[in-house]
Image (cartoon, rainbow, N blue to C red; front, side, top):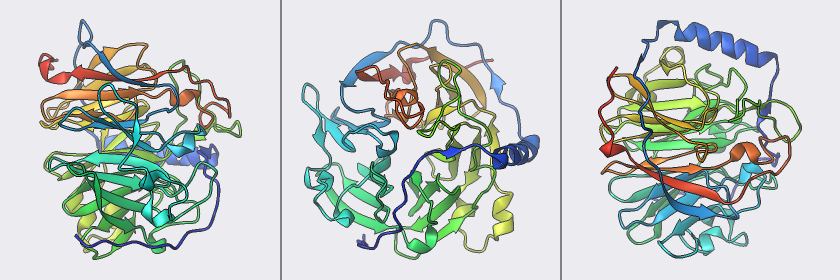
Length: 387
C-alpha cells in the first residue's frame, strides 16, 4: 500500500471541549426532529446476576481510554492527550511486564519529526488480519498542532506499514479529529472540533469532508457523569464533545457513531464512499439507532451486537442485531467505561478511564483515583438477550 506523508502543519490553536451556547439548543431540537422516525429498541430485563468482570491490567500514571488485545494476549492501550493528564500516548502491555511505547520508542519520541511519530493518538482499530489502524489527531497536550494522520501498523511484526496525512482542505482551523474506523478501503474519521466526517480513500484517490454540522454529529446536550454532575471543561464551562465514538459492522456496511452525550446514529458506508451522493442526500442519511445516554465507548462483536458503555451509571449494555437492548453489568469499578474491544471469541475488554476526574472534564481539576483499571468480560458466555 502506498505511503503518504507530509511535514506541513495547520495553525496552532489549543484544544478544549466546546462550551455550551445557543447552538446547543438548536442542535438538540434538530436532532429530536430528525429522530422522530426511528424504530424503538426492545428493552430486556437486566442480567441478574450481572456479568462477572476480571481485572487484567492497571496503570498508576495513564488514563487509558481505548484498548485492544492481540491474539497472543498482549494489550495495546491509548491514553489521550486532550485530558490534561501528562502521560504516554500508545503503549503495549505483555503479561507480567511494564508498559512499553508502541510500536516503538522512536514513534513515541517527541524529538522525532511529527510526520514520523504519534503526536497524539486519538483512536485505534484492530482488524482480523492483524492490522492496527491508529488515528493521530496531531494536537499535543500543550495545544501545538501538527498535521493529523492515519497510521497503519502490522501487529505481527510491530512495523509501521504506511501513513496517510489528512489534507488541509479536509480540515478547519478548529478541527480536532477524535475517532475513526476503517473499512472498504476507506478511513471514516470524526471531527469533534468542527463536527463533520472525513472520508479518506486509502488507495490515495482523495479525501472528502462531509456532513459538516450535521445534527447527528453535533452534541445537543451536556454530558452527565457517574454522579449526575454536568461535565465542565478547563475554563469551567459546560463541556460539549461532538462526534467522538465510532464502530463499524463486521461486514463493513454500517458505521455507528455518536457525540459523547449521545444518541447513536447509523449510516451506510456505501453512501459515504459514493461521490455521486449529493450533500443534501447525505444530510438526511443518518438514522437514529438508539436514544442513548452518554457512552464512553462503542464496541461491536462478531455477530453485530453493539456493546455500549454508559458513563452516567457505570454500566455496559448490549444492543443486538434484533434491536434487543439489555444491561449486562453495573459496577462502581466501571468508573467511566471507555473505548472497549471484543475479541473474535467473545471477550470484551473495557477500560475504566475516570475521564470525568481529569482536567478536561472536571473544571481543570485533576482528581483521578489511581490506579486506572482494565477489565475483561466473557460476553460469549452470557445468556441470550430476551425481552
